[in-house]
Image (cartoon, rainbow, N blue to C red; front, side, top):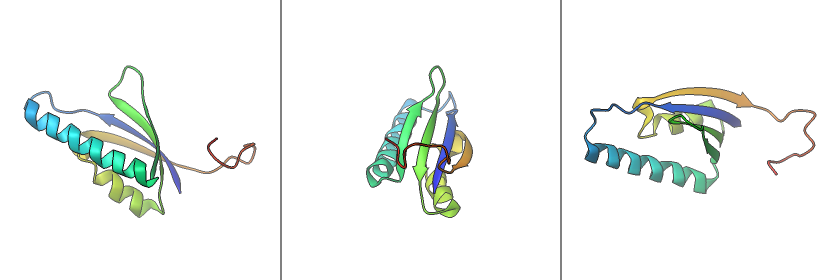
Length: 96
C-alpha cells in the first residue's frame, strides 16, 4: 500500500546541541535504512519549512504506524497521512 506522508518537525529550541545531533543522526540512519529496503520510496523537503513529504510503500496501516512511531523524531512531529491508489487515467503503472 502506498501512503503520502507529510511530516512537520518541531524540535524544542532548548534541546542540548549534543542531544539534537544524536537525535538527527539516529533519524537519518533509520530513514535511510527504510529507503534502502524500498519501504520509504520517496522523500522531498518542503521549501522554506522544516517538513517533508514522503511516499511509503508498506503492507498495511499497522506497518505504517510501526514505522512512523519508530522515527526518533516522532515525538517532535505532526504527521498527516493520505492513502494512495493509482489513478485510472494514469498512463504509467509505475513511478517512472
